Length: 100
Image 1: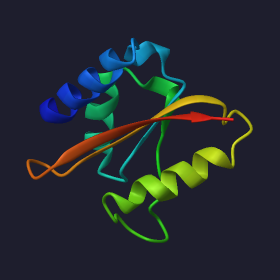
Image 2: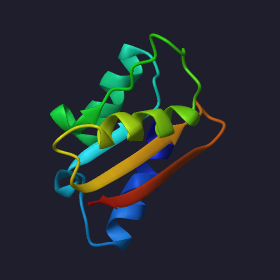
Image 3: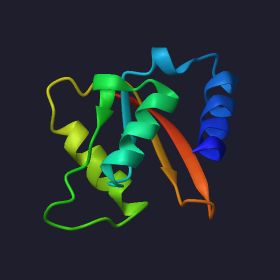
Image 4: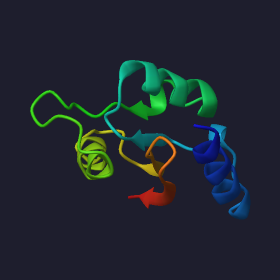
């Protein structure tokens, strides 16, 4: 997660933001241990949308679409959201969006 953390830090700093200013975090439906590491690294806490992979499995970056869909169905889907994905050494990326 070090590479992803660096990408997220760069993205947020370009916009004058920090992880504690983000309202929601969406990531891939990776293992519970990876979700915990993501949370520890970015301090997402209760703001982390944990995608439900029980019916579709782990689809990697496509998980972000499903996680965003889950987030947008919630009543608190307002403010900012950070979508972040990493491929365990292969690639990583982050997108910052505003929900309305």
